[in-house]
Each structure stands twice: as structure tokens, then as C-alpha cells.
Length: 199
Image 1 (cartoon, rainbow, N blue to C red):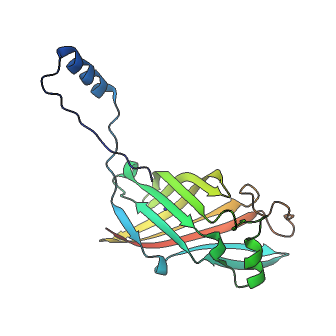
Image 2: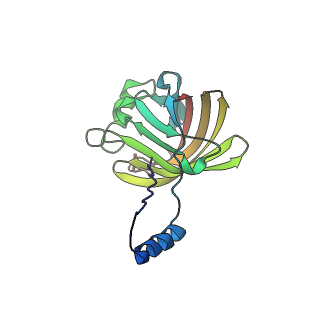
Image 3: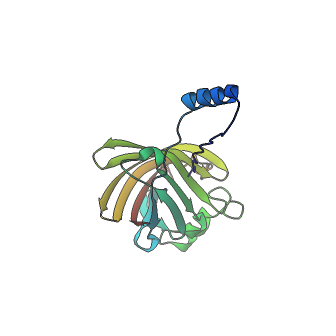
């Protein structure tokens, strides 16, 4: 867990007076793009994206084993911060092979046709000391759903640890639509823990 903004300044030498006036007016009304926040290299080996649910009252936990993240973040430059996470749903591991295989089927992640789940957040806002919200969209099976991920960040020198958690409604994401909620709850708990180094 990005739109790249590039600032352009055009200096015209010897341009006609009316052109200079038009440029000045345009400059006065144009919004200055934000400076990009620094990139962070995510250590996926020491990070995790987990999920938890239950089947017929028996709880289970799992993780996605293959994923990547592009992160730009600066507490002093949230306007230039962004997060993009790409998850391979076929890598879901819940401790039971049959359940993991079911998650790949068409009624769930349909991994034969949709190999990636993408979270893109171009708005990062502060909600207190060390606490933030990443506002964006989660794209599952080609459909984008608005999602806000609350998270905390602790930065020590060039290293950072971020943790977040949220509850998603699997039915809104088109996952297991034919499965009744009394068998598998609609609510799925998702947890994220990321360690990263500023580049």
C-alpha cells in the first residue's frame, strides 16, 4: 500500500505580451502538484497480509503468501503519499488444502481468470498521532469497491513498522455469493503488518 504527479514550469522568452498575461493568469489559478513522498522498500519476508473467518462455526486464519507493495509515505507530506498493494489470491493459505482450493474457484476468487487483487490508495489522512487512514479502492474480480484502511506507523530512522486491520464484507466483493452467512459469515477480518525501509 500510486498516482505520480509531475510539476511543469514553462518559461517563455520573448513571448508576446498577451501570451505572457495569459500564462500568468493560468499560473495564478492552477493548483500546484504535491511533491512525491519518499519510496519505502517493503520487506515482504517479515510482513504479512492475513485474514480470518469461520466455516460452520469453526474459526480459521490464513495468509496470502505472494504479494507486493509500492509505498510512498511521509507524515509531513501526506498529499504526496500513496499505497498500492497487489495480492495473488491463489496464494491464500489457511492450513487446509481443500479450503484453499475452494477459495480459487469461480464463486470465490476465480483465480483462473483473475490472478490479482489490488488495493490502491491515493489519499492518506492523519487521524491522530501515529494513526492514519488509507482511502482508496479494492479491486476484486475486476470490480472496484471503496475501502478505507486504518493503520498505525512507527518510524525509527530509515525503518518503519505499519499495522492495520479492517473488516470486509465478502458478499460486496463478490466472494462466495451463493454461500449462506450462517455457514460462512459475510464479515472477514483482514490484518496487515508491514516492515519497510526508506529508499
